Length: 569
Image 1 (cartoon, rainbow, N blue to C red):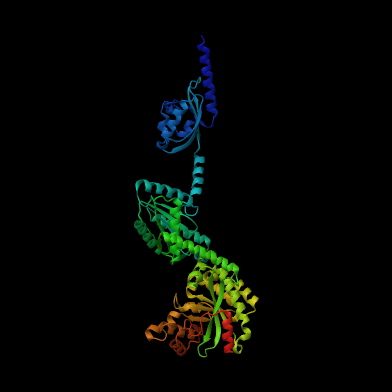
Image 2 (spheres, rainbow, N blue to C red):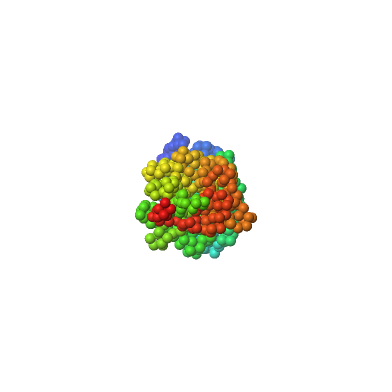
């Protein structure tokens, strides 16, 4: 007699449960601890493409993705042992059309509950949320421009690869590749086209390695490749392949852009951390850049010390520039003479660095550092200011009232700098020097790197009435078209050709041709590096107008130049 009300209560519980299920947007299901489905709400058909009566009696685990099955089974088993317990289960369920549906199920232990007696699952479709999570995760660990792994993901991959290498006693190598002179490309074709170029470079790198290798973008123009089961020798072969692939020019914004990379290679060291391996490869890359770019350097312990020393030297140079006049940087001037008379008609301003600890640092060492670090812009600004002030100070001592010119070298970065014209104008105004007495020297290689931009900048400079000289002519991409296209006033013959100007005709042919070319184009010719009277005589015979070199004077401090000018007067 007492069971009848209970059966009525069971039915009431069941009816209320089913009424709630019918009104719910989510799918409700009852499952036994062994995974057998006993009941599903009608919305199961919308979720899985199957009618509820076709699913009832089936094993839920048959619908779960293989990768999620073990976790789902364990969750059901653990929940079954906790009366009135609850849990959240995430898994992928099979749709009738063969796709996998990401779901999240809120599970409650209702075993023994009247009208239910099972594990109640409220199953929700979370595909949109999972897709968003995947997208956000991808953004966190991948580069947005190239789609490659970023530095954070690379370090994770390197750490796992190093653990495997140690466990299995297998080799592991890391290659870091830095695009050479990307800044020049960006300045020439714009940053948008520069980004297209980087994406294309990334594509070539990724397409040249194995699917198991991780390719990452570490920075603006720096890439890395993790090469598992690969020795340093094997990694060098990969770099050789990459180098060959990069030989073919890239076509960006309708232009063919040549690209080269500097490579650093590091091999896994026992007990090292992921950061150590990446740092070693980056150190080798810096060494490759310093050695001339477009090459490979394999990490050696001494490279780290060398790179650190270069970084310290850059820091010291920055401090020297901050100190300004009176600091460790000083300017000297090498006289330029008229070859026919021997009179001083001009000077070339040159910078010297007396390091407080290392002593004199050769310009061949610190000028490339200044160029690479960008400090060359400030160094060039100070050179312009010092040289124009000094040249103005010499005006009263000029022999016979003959205008004395002062030559100042311009680097590639200076010529590209948008404020260059204003800086030259400011230096001239501050010193009071006649603009026609300032000669700005540039190399022909610089002109060849971006002819249109260089021509436009030189035209702006010429409007200030300054003169322009091509330095080291004949050592780079010599072409008559440069001399015709650019507003050039002076042609400087490189010492390489002056050294042979007085020997056999065959050996001196280039030097003689350059002098004659200058005469033909009505350019002032200045021979550099004259050291012997035989060279002087040959240059006079050829009609070269001016020269400089140790035969006349080495670079001198201003007071000694003043003495020479006074003696000449």
